[in-house]
Amino acid sequence: MTHITFDYTHAKSFFDENRFQAEASRVHAIHQTLHDRHADVEGYKGWVHLPHTYEREEFTKIKRVANNIQNDSDVLLVIGVGGSYLGARAAIEMLHHNFRDLLCEEARKTPHIIFVGHNMSSTYISQVKDVLQDKDFSINVISKSGTTTEPAIAFRIFKEILIEKYGVKEARRRTYITTDKEKGALRKLAEEEGNETFIIPNDIGGRYSVLTAVGLLPMAVSGIDIDQVMAGAHQAFEELHEASMDNIAYQYAMIRYLLHEEGKTVELLVNYEPNMQSFSKWWQQLFGESEGKNKQGIFPVYATFPTDLHSIGQYIQDGRKDLFETIIQIDESVEQITVPYQEENIDELNYIADKTIHTINEKIVSGATLAHVDGDIPNMAIHVPKLDAYTFGYLVYFFQKACAMSGYLHNVNPFDQPGVEAYKKNMFALLGKPGFEQQKEMLEKRLKEFVPQLVASKMN
Image (cartoon, rainbow, N blue to C red; front, side, top):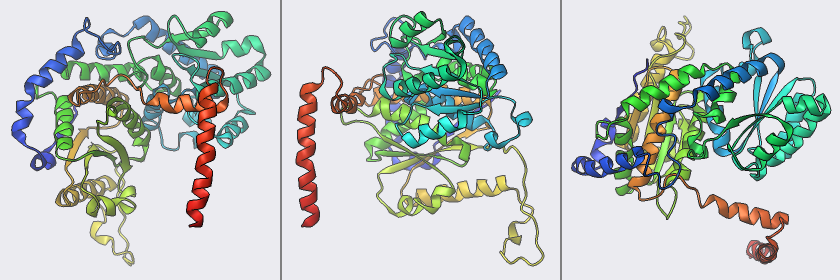
C-alpha cells in the first residue's frame, strides 16, 4: 500500500489562506456534481467511480489477450493519439527499465511496445517499418470513432503490412481493436472481420481513459501488473472520496486556482526521474485539454531536473514571475549507488564521497526549491514513496480528480475539447476532404496572401 502526501508549505506565502477555507462550500458543491451519477450533464464522468465499478469480465479478457500477444509477438504496435496512447506510454516508461528494449530477450521476456499514429512523420513510420521486417507483431488500434486522421492513416499502413506478412485470416487474429461499444468505423470493421475488441466506455473521455482497456491492454502486454494498477486507483478512490479541504486532490486543485488568481498562469510539473517524462506528457494533456477554454486555465508545461536546470533554470530563477512549480518527488530509490572516494580528488568531489546518488538528488530538490521560492516562484510537492504499478494507479486517479475540480473552479467544462476541432477542420479542408470545398478555397487564398507578405517583410 502506498501513501502519497501533498505539501504546499512553499506556496503558502503566495496566496490568501483565508480564501482557501472560504472556498470550501464551492468545493463541496463541485464534489457533489462529480459524484452524482444522475447529474452527468457533460456525459463524461464514468472515470469517477471506475476503480470501484470497472467491468471485471472485460478486465479478465484483457489479461488473457495480453498473455496471447506475449506468446506470439515480438512487438505490439499501439496505434492511437492523445489520450489513446499517452497513459499507456506513461505507465510503460515509468515502470520499466529505462533501457528495456536493449536488454537481452531473457531479461526482457515481454514484447516491445511501439507507439504509432501520434505523429505524421514519414521518417518515424519508415523506421517502424524497418524494425518490423524480421519481427512477429500484432496491432492494438485505439480510437472511439475510428476516423481520427493520424491513427487511421497509421492503421491503414500497418494493417497492409500485417496482411502481407501473415495473410488475411491471421492478420485479423493479430488485430485488436479498442473502440466504442456500438458505433464508429472501427466497431463496424471489427464486426465485419471478427477482430477481438475492447470497449472505450461512452461516459469516459480519451484523456480520462487510461484505467480502461485503452491503457490497460498495452500495460499488461508489457508485463505491468494491472491488478496492482487498479488496486492503487481504488485506494485513491477511497481516500479522495471526501468533499473536504483535507482531500489532497482538492487541496492541489484549489491552490492552483488561487495562484492563478494571483497572476501565476503557468504551471511547471517537475520530476527528477527521466522515466517520468511520458507521465508528465499525459498530465500535460489532461490539464491542458481540460482547462484551456473560454480564455481560461493554467498553461501546463513540464521539466526534468536537474537536467533542465541547466537549460531553463536561469529563466525560472530570473525570468517572468508568472509561473509556479509542482514537484513529483520519489522518496525511495531502486538501488543505493554511492559516490566513490578517489585519493587524487581531481574533481574535488571527495566531500560527497560515500553519499548515495539518491541523497544528492534530494539535496538538489531542496536547493532548487528554496532558490526558486526566493525567486518568487511558488512550489508544491507531491511525495510518492516509490515508483510501482500501485503508485501509478493512485497518481492517475489523483490527477484526474484534481483536474476535474480545477476545471470547474475555473468555470469551464473539464470534459470537452472544442478548440481541438479548429485545426482538424483546416486540415480536412487543405487535404481535400469531401464537404470542405468552400473552406479549402478560402484557406488556400489566405495562405497565398500570407507568403508574399512574409517575403516582403524579410526584404524590408
